[in-house]
Amino acid sequence: EAQVTQNPRYLITVTGKKLTVTCSQNMNHEYMSWYRQDPGLGLRQIYYSMNVEVTDKGDVPEGYKVSRKEKRNFPLILESPSPNQTSLYFCASSFTGASTDTQYFGPGTRLTVL
Amino acid sequence: AQTVTQSQPEMSVQEAETVTLSCTYDTSESDYYLFWYKQPPSRQMILVIRQEAYKQQNATENRFSVNFQKAAKSFSLKISDSQLGDAAMYFCAYRSFDNYGQNFVFGPGTRLSVLP
Image (cartoon, rainbow over all chains, first blue to last red):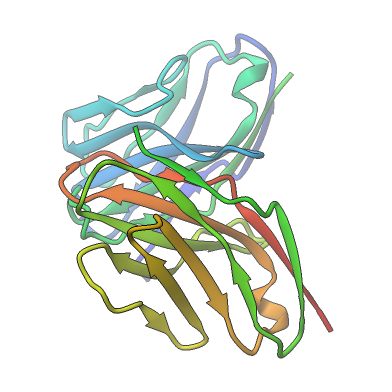
């Protein structure tokens, strides 16, 4: 089954404790992206990757890191989480980054930073 | 920068009735794409419908259709014969035609309740 998976689905952590949210897709997609969803703001892009070893900032990259060492994986790293990073996070992928491509979203990760 | 506005934070509709969700956007571009995504309680983001700005014809997917008014920068979603499974958060989104790699601009969402 074609899908985008994220782990963990739920995470409660404390300020300053480094964490990684994994994202994996099995569709051989070149393009992958991370979003955060906050009430009243919709989804906002954090980082995206056009292909292996190619990443770029989205609209809200502060406090996040990403890496793309393999085509299928695109982890989101919070080196020192803060309470304002409490949010719902989505990973998405598509064949390319072209606007015509449909993005496939993962199931979301609910992160709470205390 | 583009913006997307959904002025109805919440709406409700009776089962089997029709409901229209509003979306307006602001852009100086002439070519772009517009989307409606559905997010049920499972939180999964599901593409409902897509509209290319250069197409005059309004997109339709089964019970879902849009009213695209390019000059007014309006993109409303009509759900006909509403079903209980239509209850969800609905997001309107904009994507530039040639903004390769860059993401969508999402609206804040409208929460739709379907009453039995």
